[in-house]
Length: 505
RNA sequence: GGGCCGUUAGCUCAGUCGGUAGAGCAGUUGGCUUUUAACCAAUUGGUCGUUGGUUCGAAUCCAACACGGCCCA
Image 1: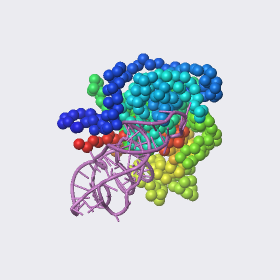
Image 2 (image 1 turned 135 degrees about the vertical axis):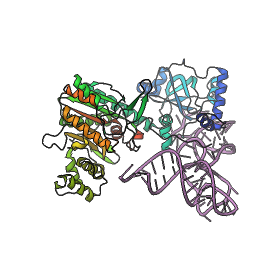
Image 3 (image 1 turned 60 degrees about the vertical axis):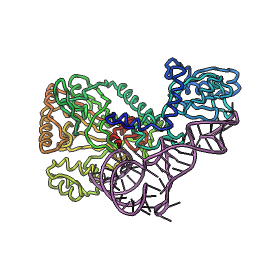
Image 4 (image 1 turned 90 degrees about the vertical axis):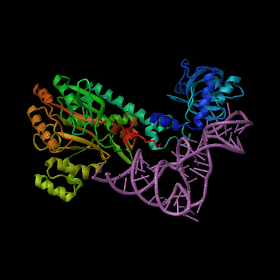
């Protein structure tokens, strides 16, 4: 019942009650009469995986001879007659619990056992007639009662919304989901090992910043009470990591969360994980080589093969990636005869008209060119491709190309029509950087909310001399999507952002 | 922001032409007790997402809203 003035969350929880939960609460009450219902003095001797490794290959007779006793613990996942399947963090082990051979009080306890309960059990290791490794249970104990029933045993939990909102249930019943997050963890661990082995140092820079910088994106805004100061959640760690190269840390990386106040989609979550690394005395070509090597090694580590299948496409990470300039990619995928259309602002505007691009004629030429790329080309780039020569107007932190000052020594890696990485030779000329910041401020003042602020301290840092360097960011969520064949970023985030559910009174 | 689709028992899903709600699993009771989505018999369980409209009558038709999915921008 929803009492007037009751906490809405409590009201929702109360409404969530049903007969199945009530029955289990009654069982819990009965247990509370007998003893502590949530003991924490049970200790197990074996995990399911350890038992499988030690005894899985043994013959039934040999096991009988051994008569090895052990103790396990885990969640009840199946009950088939006298058989109870227990799952622990390592895998599954079957228990044999015949209520006719158990002592009377345990037979009573067995009646109260439900799917989802967490129990400890001990007994002799044996193999059933069908050859399944099992434990002939002589003693068992309920360790934690499940008051809520598990989803259906065969189909698991398939409602997408509930899988995201109640990930703990998804993880209990859907092995494929568990595997995705195990793989994510392996990938992140591997990346750290990879950079550590190359002599990079992992660092942590501010996530709360007084000036958001390092990317063109809308930030989340918050407030620091004691300082009475406006603060921003970082959109990128870039400017702090580059300050560290000024300080003399020549190879640094950070693998952590960024926050961008933008829409949600199958490839965007407001908080997402990014790897950024900065490498002194290297240039963007070195980054591309490293990126190819990293992706190949991740593929072999995770998939045991450089061939990765993703959503119907197949990528061979043993091969070097294609390399194509922004302009070249537009020419190729829009079937343009020559590059004359890119000569000046007027001709670019004319081309945007011809291609039916949505744009603002007041935008600088390079920004219109990027709109062409994003609206007409990016999604078509399936196979791994480095797109290079990004316009200087959309690359305010990247080093200018020495042959063509309109573009930067920058690349993005596109796979499956998605941006996976973005890297460039760093702009370490403080006077050029100050100029670029001023251009960003002008764009911000003309209404571009994503344009950057002028970061005077960053300019001061560059004035102390930053070594020539190259730096790159790799989107970890999208990378995990690629290596787990996941269609949505929500499938690789344990707790993706969701709109709150509304309760109707 | 726009388009399309979805929302029915704890879970997975049916629901015909608008005529008063169904299955499997889970649960309960009993049987069986070396099974593999165990099996056999009986049985409980529903604000049909929310609000409003049309109608003698709405899970079903219409509208708005909420949440989710896919596609587009």
